[in-house]
Image (tube, rainbow, N blue to C red; front, top):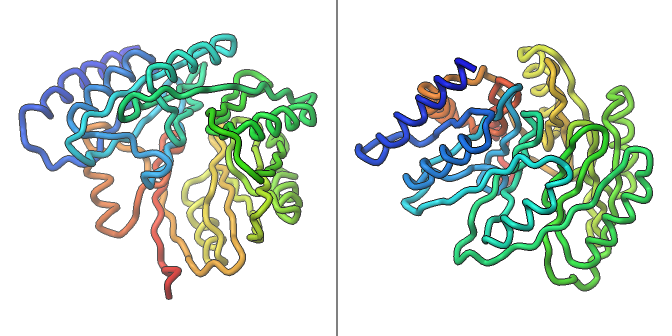
Length: 331
């Protein structure tokens, strides 16, 4: 509790100062457990040109250890960015998403953080405030075939899968509405990650059938098979409890052409990485894992990594994963 109070005071003091002084600060770390405090900190930073840098912006945000979550922002422009943060229980998920969507808020790429009692969802208001429609599909561990059918039905109606949210043993697939797409015959498969000893084999078998990983939750991975995707993929799993061992194994695996595509939010002390290799890919990658620095030192940590051409890839528990390209695909 003392730590959270100190964090709240830090955000309350430091964020307003950004409006009154010129600064070269590019990155900002927001770390808390309380929904309203997270939302307030994000919106205060958003008025200063800091924006969420998940998914399509080049860094995928993972999760930080209980009891809170860590969110990374980067100063990208002078535009004001407005955010909404949800921490719904299962029964309130559909209602709260529908309300946020009606106000023009859109779930951000990798905007579901599994770091608190209830997952934290981060949404940003879209330019013009156009409404967004959301639906959810409940996936039950004891009836995955029926759940896969429900997901396929929703996709055929034009809804795009944008997230997985797990509470207790089952999870919900979050879909964003849209117009039905012609000839979009996709199929989905769910793999449990409760048994890590068989996960790599199950992923490899699915890949031979044309499936690719798209999302994961605490205990399940969702795979997709597009009808027109002829790319061959292979998967490799790296799991260890030590950061130094993880870097060594990731470096060895990536030298064979594999790249990290997912870090399932397993919790606990083990690092679990899923790496993918596509046929014909020429890129090679190198990884670095560092302890997540304090809010005051976070920008310096990011800047130092950039000097070595490393870019932040994910926040994992209390660590930051960095990646750099060492063999460009154009060579």
